[in-house]
Length: 375
Image (cartoon, rainbow, N blue to C red; front, side, top):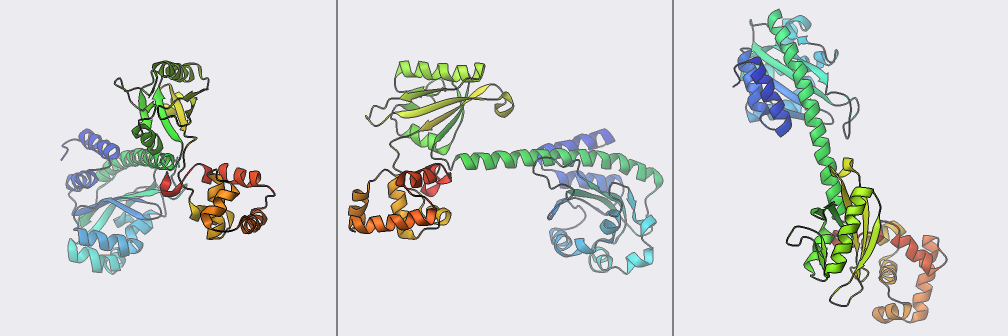
């Protein structure tokens, strides 16, 4: 437990950065003020109890699930958000003694009767935060006949100010982590390979499709011996590195087709600049397409997005994969005339008149970027 105020505040910000240790820190606050319990929690759509020393796990669960909505301390404090709350100034002792939260939760457990703390907003709304809805609760609890003094109230005000800042830091880090995880998950659903490279060509990130392409060992290497993106041929690697350096340094895009030893159609590579704000330092975004890709389209997605039957979705998937009508008719064991009738029904449902319009509808939307199983 921290011995000085400054040490306590240092530990508090450590909690915000690591998002752990809140219960231990709050336990130190309870001991510092001679309390029997305490609470630090964030509120938004749900109550997020970060630390509730002085109460066992079952009592904490009962508070979160049932008694929070009956907490006279929190209800009264929330009437003046950001202000210091002292139960002995706001609630008559008889009223609190007869309350459900005291009779059914506090009295049987530790006899907590007095509270000092606040219900306050967690900084300004930022990122993914719910504007005007995220608050925090901070409270130290003491037994009956031990109210808090004015000097202790001034100390709590100093601490609460730092709790607000620390929770705002925690929220920003949480939002940034959520955005990062969501972004990376989205990239892993793309059929196109996505690589983030430094100006030198060193790879910082590669999505799932890029990793699959690398494992094919067919003229594309995510990380050579020096950790750089490389082609199967030295000359093409040099050109690729120049494109990356130009995108990172001069902000100009470029493109190259990388040949494949297998003889399949070359990898199609686009190189675009990434801002220093997005990448942390100058870098390039490398997009890699495989013209020979034959991964199946998601039939359920085709049905849902275009309003087609299962059979019609299978036809659209085959057309998008490059099959002609004769091949599709043969695969499905139907006459080509029957298939043309089915295709007219598809045109009517999707509002297009030509096969090229249908393919454009598929390939330019989310269906064209993903495949079954998320790529």
